Length: 230
Image (cartoon, rainbow, N blue to C red; front, side, top):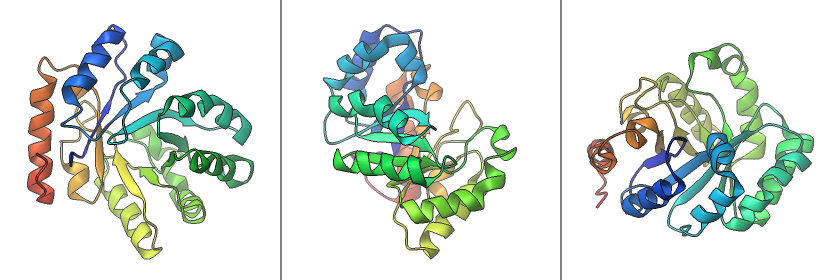
């Protein structure tokens, strides 16, 4: 499946069976699924265990706890989920390397799992601190060489800046962009400036016809990148 859509499954007003049915209905038209703390708090590890029965090696199964702690805490936080088969984990870059991201990346690599670092966030508040530290964050990225990065669809100029840095430093990293839909960015905004995937949540999950929305977004992406998603 050549879709560029990652569905953020952050809704908490649905029964667990809704997620199972949703994944079954969409697995052939999206690239992956992202689960955050709202899912953990609402459905617990039991919920993750149920979802893990659907895990395959064709999709990204992303855990987005935005890890930001010392290495032993982060590793203990994700260990059970790694064992369940979830294959991609998002952490903050600002926590640094020694005693933090170096060890986390090493642990995940040994488990055939991927690390994605937050370079910038999609809300306006990211400009207050995180974006002011972008040059420092990019140096962390240069030294760590994570598998992927998060950069906001709400600020395409930030994606362009990060993409340029990756190119100049010969760093291969996937770019995942949140902020599509409810936060204001139109589908295709991030793909158009070089992101690899767009993370889309409520625009899809709160729709009365999520499959139709996904197919429409796939069409937009297809027109931008010229790839047949069928």
